[in-house]
Length: 337
Image (cartoon, rainbow, N blue to C red):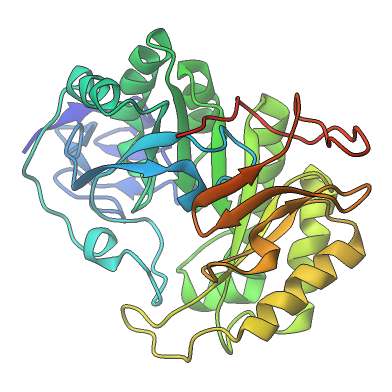
């Protein structure tokens, strides 16, 4: 077991109050927080997954999905164990529903692997990256010195303190999964404060993060028009019409056996988002579909043609449409591989 005192907690006599995520667990001595990765040892809070990784893989940034952040690049992607949500449809349940303490990595080892793989960035993903934050902060600081970008693929339930610390360490990309409306979070995800998710979406953009949102549309859970419309409305209200939003196809996983999302439902969400003013809606997990491409919001010119996570054609010139010169919001340069 590799343990290290966490940066994110306060003492309450012999108890501790964790400030890593918005569960803000109050933990008795010799007990664990809800995520099982934080333990109160002699009145101090320790992370027991510091540098403990469950997976490491070089992956295209588009697979996250990030479509407006370092397009064409690859990020060395890694994870630890466990999660602070309880979603019964979890697509990565083999990592998020278990806790194994085995292989420890020094941050410098990960930087070396990324450089050897010719990756442009670092991405904490697969399970909830917030649980690896203490170690990620040190990793991202080193990564910044080597010119590597850093990003999270997250459920967005970290505290504002964590958001700010990560940004100060060099992280500037944040993809947040929006599970549904308030009812979906309360019914399926655990004791989650729905408003804290949207607060983080809003505040992360103010801090300086590049934000992309993903809504996994699940059959008979969050696929009704009212729920989809609310997500679009909140996106526009909190972060504006130029924030990319991905409506992705669900497939049965973990404890959930509802049928896969109908493609027509994804197309409905895409068209509704366009109608309501979103400039960059997408659908995901439907390789080859026209709606996974980027089009100019002004003249509808095809600008980035994709097949799944692969970029087939990239027509932007200095992030502008070559036909009408409309400025497209892209963070980082296009990497042709």
